[in-house]
Amino acid sequence: MWKVRPSEKAQYLPVVEETESDGMLSGRPSDVQIQEDCNGSGRGLLWSPWMLHIIAFICYSFVFGMMYRNPQSNERCVEKHSLYSPALEAVSDDYKLVRFNLSAISPSPWAGPPSASVDAAWQKYTNLGALVLSEEDLIRTNGSRYSAKVPKEVGDGYIAHVEWYHQLHCVYMLWQQTYPEWYTEEAKMREEEPELWHEHLDHCAETLRAAIMCHADANVVPSNWVKGRHWPHPNYNLDHKCRDFDAAYQWYYEHQANPPPGFEMFARPEEGGYSEYDDLPFDPFDKGTVVPLKEKAPKTE
Image (tube, rainbow, N blue to C red):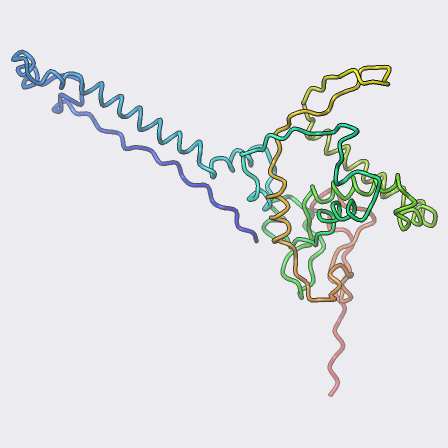
């Protein structure tokens, strides 16, 4: 299981207990203080209750200010607006201010026409291995309790990945369909297995639709007049507050499963002992159809 740094407990200053015998702390001057004041000495002592309040206020402000700036406090804020994920340890409230550059003439390492360098840019983020999710984290994420396990040669847990990885894969997959002369394997799949091809594309489109509607980006888009256009063109070159994607990628990269060389991690277990379904289960407690473990053949002497 990946460790998420525990939140630190807030520390508070001790409250000074006031007593009637302590005139200075109670705010009521003692006889000695009155005498000193009448004699013109010790006048500052009459102000000491106010000074204590000011000092206490400054101390409290400092403590709460440090709590606000504390990274652990920031993580609690992130968790407030996110479902649990072990990958959240790579995310903080220190969002980056990024101005998107989506002008048509602006080059992008991920945009067409396709080339070896463009594919390398995409594959850096879409050719990662699987994660190993612990049983405790599986339950905390409310995942299917009968998810596929990693082979024992790899570790103890469940096969998993993070959502951004899948979403980028879907964008890449849909973009590839516009260049069939370059992505010939994908074009071949369309010809030979059209039903499976459409199922894959529909799945990716639905994944992205759900994510977009879930996040509901509220940025307002103005428009500009562009030469050769008959209507104002929306200008998507806007500021955005973004999570640190480099940190998210680095976390995934460092937590990939490490199977032995040449080992097939995603092979269906030959010995059985897993659940299978006609379609992906919506209910996390759906047990599906259990494929029983095969009995081991007795050893022959």
